[in-house]
Length: 84
Image 1 (spheres, rainbow, N blue to C red):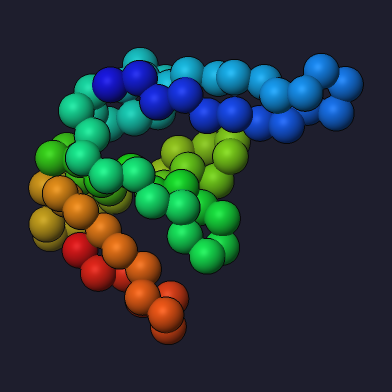
Image 2 (cartoon, rainbow, N blue to C red; image 1 turned 180 degrees about the horizontal axis):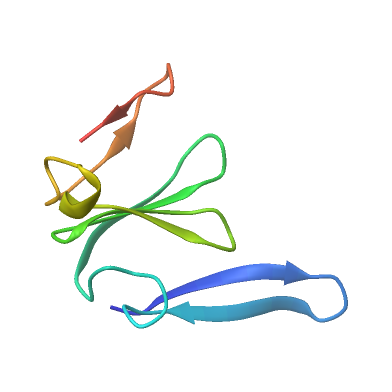
């Protein structure tokens, strides 16, 4: 799956970057994308959970001790708790 992300550049408007499993995503099949109240982008997939901070991806999967690495959906409640 190709996930385009736009960043605002001051001189030209917006910059488009594409991410795949070759440069940060853990799966080419992703289920849900959520931006949380802190601005992080969370990507849920059957390969695990990925957090993107605008520069780097952090992977949460079975190899990192994440028990339920098949994440189909995710929500953030009013108290900033995540429900999966």
